[in-house]
Image 1 (tube, rainbow, N blue to C red):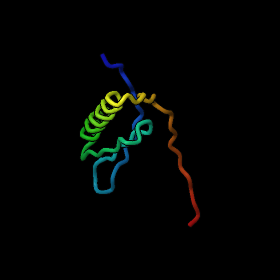
Image 2 (cartoon, helix red, strand yellow):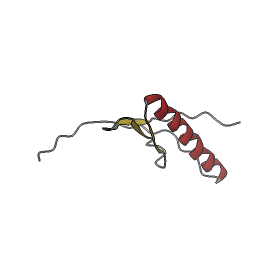
Image 3 (cartoon, helix red, strand yellow):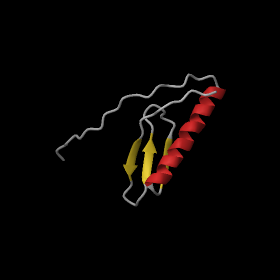
Length: 76
């Protein structure tokens, strides 16, 4: 039986619509959905797929990592 894992995800609204999803603890995971629901479903699928690959290849499954979103102002 597989252990349960929780991961922080970043959802980035795209100018043309939809969302890009990234998982900081799992850099190979980048996906997209036209709606929030689709983005979340695609993220779940992508995370499950990469964890399956890690298990098959004997790669240690990484824990979640804490992230911080902040704002930086630059004079242009």
